[in-house]
Amino acid sequence: MSTIKHVSYRNLGWDSAADLYLPADFDEGKTYAAIVSTHPIGSCKEQTSGAVYGRQLADAGYIVLAFDASFQGASGGEPRYMEDPAIRVSDIRYAIDYLVSLPFVNENRIGAIGVCGGGAYTVSAATTDHRIKALTSITGVNFGRLMREGFSEFDPVGALNAMAEQRTAEAKGAQRHVINYLPDSVEAGKQAGVSDIDVLEATDYYKSERGQQANGATSGLFSFNSAAMSWDAFAHAETLLTQPLLVVIGDKPGGFGAYRDGREIYGRAASKAKQIFVAEGWSHYDLYDLEEPVALAMAQVLPFFKQHLQAEERLR
Image (cartoon, rainbow, N blue to C red; front, side, top):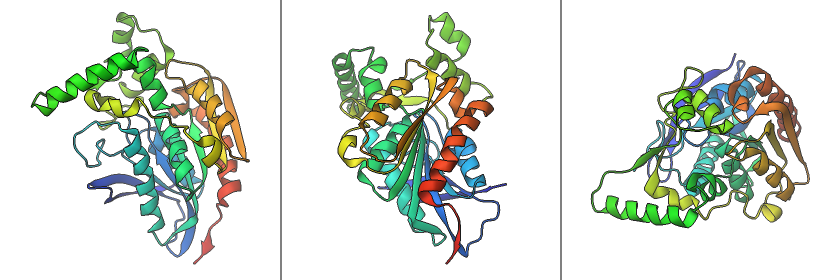
């Protein structure tokens, strides 16, 4: 079984915390293909990006780095709970910087995988960081599109005005307004009239023993969310995203929009080698951790990375 080494490395002006997953037969005298694994919005490295996909990729022979986003989890940065897409993409670049500094990582065989918002951040990173040689988006969500639509109740200008007012108040000393993206429980959500499959299943994952972790806060700093409003995870993909791409989605659409975003990036990407896999009968959050849909996803992920990263080890 793979093992975990807790590591940290310098980011812009703070340290990033990460788990480095090592294959069971890890040998420092060999070089390995490596994969950066990026967690969802409001998540942390101990949840699906690390414990599920990171673990299984390491079991298959890869070095995997699952990190906490800046301002979140065990990583540094202030103020806390910022979800700034530009910095989230920059986090992936710094994760690659760390990997290529390791003598047992082959810098020419770097892959990337991300879940939910992390999937779309991975796409964005790959458009401008071609050290990423192949990438996989697991039920990826374009956070910019989600902010302009569902998270602003389809009133992005009204939301921007509210964010501006709140940020001005905070600059003058008011308490930071940290919002929780989810209800306190599934039952509380239903009582409040929530019926969307994504919101209810997210709550079940993040706020029960199924996936709950101390650093998986599902929280966001409201006044700083304006940074996402004009952001598009898929910008310039028609020109710049040329690496092999695998998109995995479930066929039960929900309010967070992974199904439509997956179809969109598959169509827009310039990648000559690209494929999309639809897990029939499964939802967005099923693909986080449930054994059967994750197995369906990994049945696509492992041969994809094997083909494009050439996962076999070699002596240095």
